[in-house]
Amino acid sequence: MSDKADPNPYTLRPADGPADGSTGDALRDVELELSKRWPENKLEPSLDRIEALMDILGQPQRSYPSIHITGTNGKTSTARMIEQLLNTFELRTGRYTSPHVETVTERITLDGAPITPERFVEVYRDIEPYVQMVDAQQPVPMSFFEVLTGMAYAAFADAPVDVAVVEVGMGGSWDATNVIDAAVAVLTPIGLDHTDKLGETTGEIAVEKSGIIKSGAVAVVAQQQLDAAEVVLRRAVEVDATVAREGMEFGVIRRELAIGGQLVTLRGLGGEEYEDVFIPLHGEHQAHNAALALAAVEAFFGVGGARGGQLDQDKIRQAFSGVSSPGRLEVVRRSPTIILDAAHNPHGARATVAAITESFGFTRLVGVIGTSGDKDVAGLLEAFEPVLAEVVISQNSTHRAMDVDALAALAVEIFGEDRVQVEPRLDDAIAAAVTLAEEEGDLGGAGVLVTGSVITVGEARLLLGRK
Image (cartoon, rainbow, N blue to C red; front, side, top):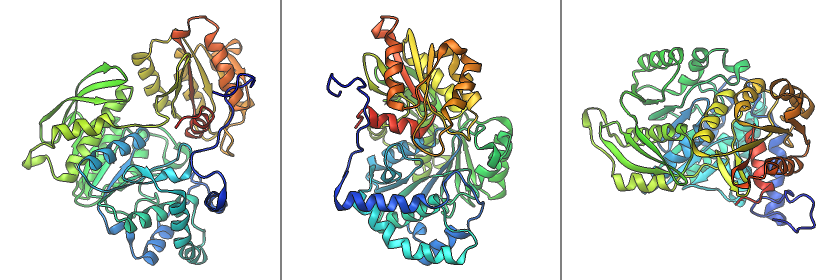
């Protein structure tokens, strides 16, 4: 906490790592150069640019096996679980996820740790001349996300890693990550998000997302809406892939609440049960993410099907007990409890609401909400309305943030004017929400939920000094 004389204790603090000096300056220079490219929410559906870069670099993405993950929600948590499982089995991993919570280096990790700022700059400078060559040859220059994807694949090859865990940025078929031929494709639940780019129904969106399923691969598939499930199964048949379906070939057998998380029993691909697995994350959706992650790792190791079998139970328990997922129902303060959650669409918000209702006994919960402008914001607010006594509307510092007045107008329609307060600065919003939460006098039952965007959550994490 800051000095008591400070009227607002939630003062922005610098991110971990070099804030000045040559490395910090070099990283900021690279981030500035990357920021001048097309942002990752702008899509020009083509693999031509990333394929051209991979050709020039000598196909680094083919020097290691991969596990590829798509879906609407749960991708990053599932990727982190898969990474933890593989690390426990003493494999060197590279993980590529997006967006980042606090710093861009988080997107490219080796053995669970973000690459250093020095290494991030080095990789960028190594491939920069080749990126410029591709830019010169293509009608559209490489985007921010495409360059980062190229950096990740090059860094993994150079490490070298035993396996890469790769999260799709948006969609699947035309996503820049889809130049890998992953032996295992993981599809988390498919909901409605990016409907202007991917389709207006879950079935239409599934067409794009199922494009990561490659010939002869194993597709590990979460429970889906019927139209999405039909599309995924049709794609698997077309490319002769094996399908493992949650609720059929694997799944969650039992779960119960535990201090700091939940205790689950999972059924793996071999039909065997993994009992008493502690997951230090809240929400039923995280249990299902764990089942997906376990099935993906089993498929990677060849467990299941005619072979049957099971992975070492003690190692599975060890791996899951060490899982973390920053910004996903993450408790960062007590008295009152402050929770950060990166829900940014109605599907994710409903999962968050269910988890909060199940795992926390709040008598008064106040929301701090800052969203991006390209989301179903009304649907997100409607999902949160039943559990939030009041909301403080704010915004993050990026160009994608929804205008605070426009967001407030939507919030008033859903919550009513008496339950909406506006604080454009996020630090002021958090301080105001804490005051509102404490008004009832029951400090033990008071809580604040900061949500609406991964970016908003990341900035709140910095404000709160979370390590």
